[in-house]
Image 1 (cartoon, rainbow, N blue to C red):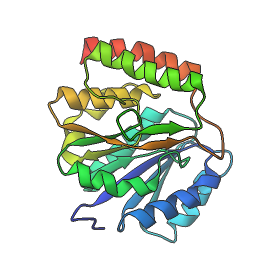
Image 2 (image 1 turned 30 degrees about the vertical axis):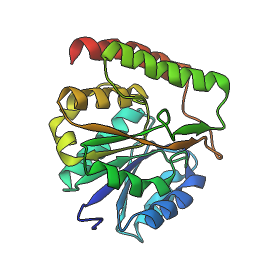
Image 3 (image 1 turned 90 degrees about the horizontal axis):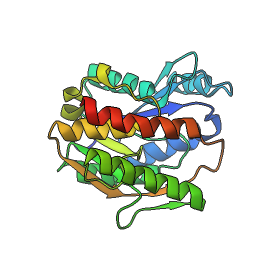
Image 4 (image 1 turned 90 degrees about the vertical axis):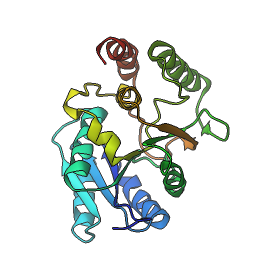
Length: 237
C-alpha cells in the first residue's frame, strides 16, 4: 500500500451513488499506486452499499462502513478519519462520490502535501473553476466562503471545498469527538480547527464538475446550518 512511501486512504461518503461508484474506483486506481478507499454508506435505497460490499469482497483495497440512515456528511467523515487513524495510514483524502472531484487531480495533491499538513482543492484561486453551475449557485458558494473568512479570519479562498488531503499528524491533533458540524459546515470547521492548531494549510486549484448522474445533496437547510455554525466556531474554538 505504498505511494511515494505513504499509506493512503481515500474516504468517500455515499448516498444513492450506485452509478458513479465503478467509474470513481477505476479513476482512483488509475491515478494512484495502490491506495485504499473507504466508503461510508448511509443506507442508500439504490443499493450503493451492497454494490461496494460485493466489490470489496474481491479487492482488499476497498472498505465499506454501512450506516442505517442519513446521518450527515460530517459524521461520515469523522467515522472515516477514525478508521484512518486506527489503521495506521499516513495520508487521508476526502472527496465526493459523484465524480465532481476528478481522480486525476489526486497525484497533484501528493506533490503539494509534502509542504503542508492540509491541502484544500480550491475552485477560487487562479486555475480553479466550477463548471455547469448557475449564477445563483456560484454566488451562494462564493458568498459563503467570503462570509466564513470574514468572521473567522481564516486566510484561504475555498474553505467549503470537500476535496482535501490531510497528513496524519493534523488529524491526530484534532479532538474528533468535539467536531459538531454535520453538513457542509463540517469542511469549514475542520479547516478552522487545523489552522487554529498552527498547522500549515495550502490550496491547489481544481476544476469542480457538477454531477452528471444523480441528485445534489445540497439544500437550503444545509446552507443555513453553515451560516450559524460559523458563529459557533468563532466563539467556541
